[in-house]
Length: 150
Length: 409
Image: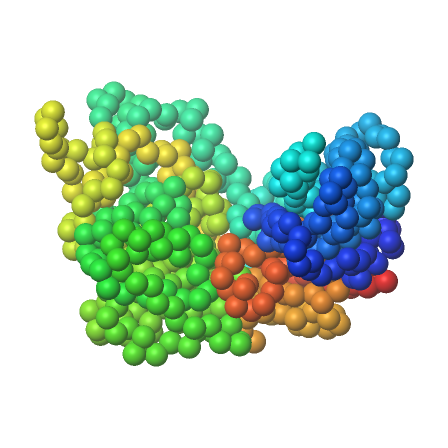
């Protein structure tokens, strides 16, 4: 078997793609939509920020390949409860993990490091980043709320 | 060809395509993305090289030797295309960048001239975006309405003459790029003609795959792309009935298309030049002419028979793999098999296939509304051409069986 494929589609990734965690909707949350028009992957991400700007709760729905679904599922598990600065740091490090040959600081990424194999498949980076781009957009909208309290 | 092609003949034909002889990810390349773009035989590559090494100049205006040769090569290619499609006049062939531009040309000339508010443009639910979006744009401009012939479960059209009520133009795909359905073009054109409806046939998937004669088909316009039939990218053509072409206003203004120009106005040449402003893709046309010669030498009936055998084998083999559902008609089909695999998303499957040297295409195949109707996020498609082999189809089945074990764990 092909090692790069084995690395890309590890058991945990396939498991998350078939049984995504935090799959669903959150009423009274910020809703953002992300898509990859060229391949048809879609995500709706619902994020609730706490008064201090931390990520209080997060759910997603959507359709897409194993990589985009697993990345979304793992992202929600990892970011829930994180202070904003920490969430941004993880987003930055995850992007480096899937796009760069230099290993980022993987502290706190947990199972997300299993998506490292994506860096060997440049065409699939957009799949891995779909949920994260949606989160980035939510941060922009949520950020407006938090700066009011500062 | 006087006699039927043997396996040996097909292997010789395959050897005309240098690109096929390579390894991808350590495995022999299996190129099954022909519906997106075909490969080019040496004869076409050599024609391009010969043109640039010996004859290159601008066409029509020059009085020097190279310009004459370039003009002869360019206009010679037009003659070949006209004969290839069974056109009654060479001047009915307008060179375009491809199918998309040919359809846009009709929408922007014939369409703008003839369509009024509440006129109906009839399309089908299986159209490629290139035979949908130009009409949406035209509908926005003119107030015309779009209507669609439904696609039923087996991937065929549920056409009935009543759908033609109030219709000015019926534009439909000859062979569906996402289902493989071969629509009964002659029958549809006859029904349209009987009620005075103008027809456009999108021939992107048919021009290189089966014998096409536009007069026998009875359409008014036929659009196709060269690159799906062994020619270079960036060249294709629109065939149109001369009486319609003559009435159509020009589209792009510029050099080549005029008779005389003052600061205030211009008069235009006759078709086809009226629709070919600016320096055309001369080398592309030369390459298209060479591709036409190449395909005619093999024979389009032979090509169709070979492609049909590959498609039928693919449908049979895919059907043996649990969880795979092949889309499209059960009988005769075009040179492709698109399928849904319950155990893997099309992109995961195409990534997997690519790691095994197999080029498939995954996605919506530029037919998003059809995918939505079928409630599929997309499909995986294997599309064939005459240089593919039954051995390659068997190898694809092997790879997909292994893919199922890999993803379904």
